Image (cartoon, rainbow, N blue to C red; front, side, top):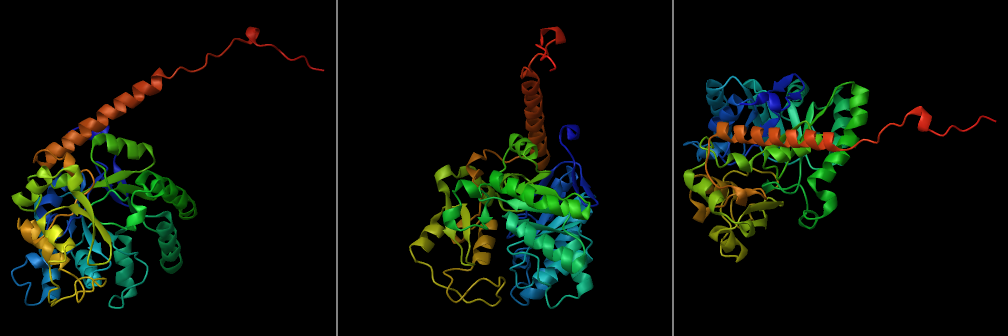
Length: 391
């Protein structure tokens, strides 16, 4: 594997051999198997805590307790498979967000990726000391420079430090998006433009704190060429999720993976999620039935997301995602990024990383050749330069 062709990614004291973070995918898409495989290849493997307890046999009895047990089990299983870098992805909007974060902290997770909200207010159930310990491992997932400024100012004032890194997610990502539907296709909200604004927003905080803040871009990144381009634009690394679904190690069922191999560009649609956010998914009969109003609201024994109005929701999104993960796509659906239609075959994580590395190296060689081919203006000898007489 050509690690030397890819730059390393530094997040505080964490140093990854390659600048690739595998995005967290719930329910049950990225668990111990996928995360450990990515970590073994030098990247950062991420376990998704979203709906993780639904996969536990005792989920119906005490979901809140089982959710924490399931996360603990997955972290421990991953640790048995790798000595590499592991992270967890947790939704701030989750009703048990604080407990999940504490569980990850107790299991000595390397990084905590927090999305679906900004990590500003300390949960009432956590002590200040534990909250600070969580934040010291936290990489916030944001979609604007404004969010960067809010987080940095608040953390600096309240705790005396700022994040070591941010994941900047654009509108081409799969799953829930941090944009309104009307913003998604506007040039101003595209990832490259947001990245430029984030870099500018971060600089004064880096200067004041005298420490670098790493920027990881996410959403629509598919190839080694994409990785090279984003690093040239100023990012230190990338987060990729959809690309890792078509791997043998992905924790989803084969039927789930095949849905990606079979989908076409026109199958990727924006949906209105029951939790109040737009999302990008693969169109199927389940989503068609939802759009036709053919599904009825269901009883909810556990409100897993604070933003979900389960009394009005046409379906339980956690249950739908779990059904899809298990291959029952007639009773659920798959979230997917804009490049999902480009997936052609199931490969291993190692083969995927090798392919991305090779593409990056080729792009680097091309870039250097192009740079050398640019003709520089020839410097003229002094005798050919007309001297202006001194008056």
